Image 1 (cartoon, one colour):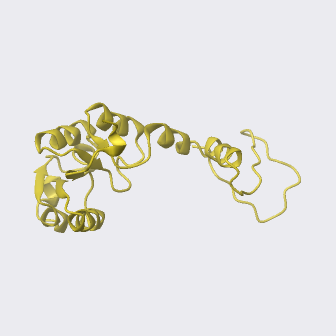
Image 2 (cartoon, helix red, strand yellow):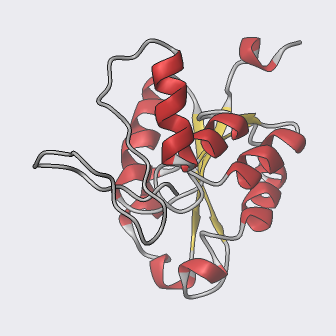
Length: 161
């Protein structure tokens, strides 16, 4: 069965704080059971109480907990979750994590790993938008140590990645 036709029955929310509360509230309204994760300092945080099941990731820093994709995928599998929602920040823009979730046979609630990679490169994302016919402003590239000529102010300078 294609994943797009699978029903989410238990959703692991791979984040902390208010975003977990909001996603859990929406999931509960849809009849979806929720799983949350937490670090040791967040043991008593509001998001731990907002989910049906909470799993300790250990660690006291985000790098030791919320950024451990392997531990999050394992928690999803051990709790019978069939989907993972990354929230925002942390692993939400990590294409490798999205792919690991998919490779584990879980539903990834978010953009595809290829879309995450594309949007991680602002120049490539801009070109994709132009190719798709999305109205956008002109793109002017500048090499390190040189500046584009003939631009009028104001301008926005944006790093490519």
